[in-house]
Each structure stands twice: as C-alpha cells, then as structure tokens.
Length: 234
Image 1: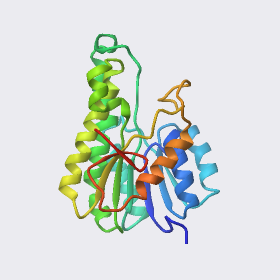
Image 2: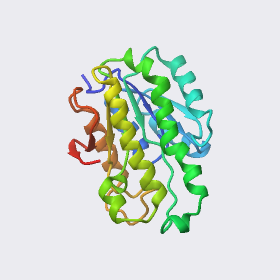
Image 3: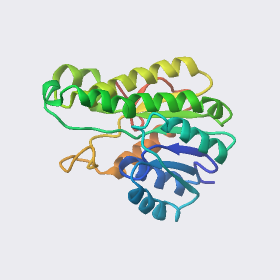
Image 4: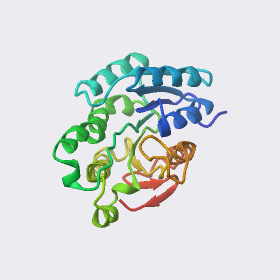
C-alpha cells in the first residue's frame, strides 16, 4: 500500500518549484492531485510529466485575480466529494532592498496572492476537508518571514511581512479547526527556485521532500511551523 494511496490533494503553484516536486512525490505515493498554475505553457509542460505518475488534474488560475479562489473551489467540488489535503504553496516575491525601494504598490499587489488567496481557499474548502480522512492544511511559509528575520533583515519587506502574516493565519485557523482539520505551516528551505534565486543552497526536490514529511506527521499536530518534520519558531 502506498503511503498516500487515494488521498485527494490540492496543491497551488504545482507547475514549478516546491509545488511541482511535491506533486511528483504525492502522485508516486498513490495520491490524486489537483494542481494550479498561472502560466499556461509551464502548466502544460508540468502536466505532461505529472500525468505519467498518476491522476493529475491541472487548473490554470492566477491568484492575483480576486475571483481565483472561488473558481478553484468550484472545480475541486466537481472533481471530488471530499478533500484530504490543501497545500497553499503559490506565492510571489519581488526582491527590493527596503520599504522605500519597494514603494507603495508591491505590498498592495502581493498581499492578495500571498495572504488573501490562501485564507479564502481555506474558508471555502473547509466543508470538503471536513468530509476528508484526517484532513490537513499546509501553508507554505518561509524562514525569511519569521519574527527574528523581521527584526534583523529589512530587505524584501513585503515578502517577509506576508509570510509572517501567513504564520499568524495558520495559528488562527488551527485554533478554530482543532479536532477537525490539522493546520500547519512549512518552511521548505532556501531553494534554487524562481523565488529563491540561483544562489540558494538547496534544490526544489528538497522542498518537495519536506512537504511530504510535514504531511506525514501525526494528525494531532496542528498550529505549528515546521521545517520538514522538525518544529521551528514562527
């Protein structure tokens, strides 16, 4: 029996990086995966590879669009009657030195994808998750957005702030859904992805493995921040 046999998993940002590597591992482990992507060509290429491993359903959507979470929910509800995992992985990042270098627009633009969209997906998909088997939500955060980083590193402030907010949202949803849905946050590590850049020490496959590790924790673990299966501080 494969460890995720029959599990129904939604992964946002599944066409690249951590999302793509996670989808590969979950499909190989027997899961069914519904994956989103914002770039049609990249999603098409990913679908060719992922469909070789199992049942993968692609969905083209851009979480900068305020209607995106509702659109995802509608299609997921037509795909399955229940959901076991929601993995909020999609995010955007623009590297700037500080708030003045960023200006005022970036915070407004990126808050929707990095915070509002994961929150709305949880809000809308909880009924399906509650019909799942030991259902879980994983919000992909970052060590760049923990409290210590905010106090000592003023670069890329919007990204850091949105990831810090995602951690707070994780704790609040975990408290509300305790005993019904496990809700945790994951730091996948600093990886050579479009977000992490070419100088990162890790590769996307490392993040995929850490996603599998957090999803393999006891279901009773909730409201925490993890680096794979190691608990860390928000």
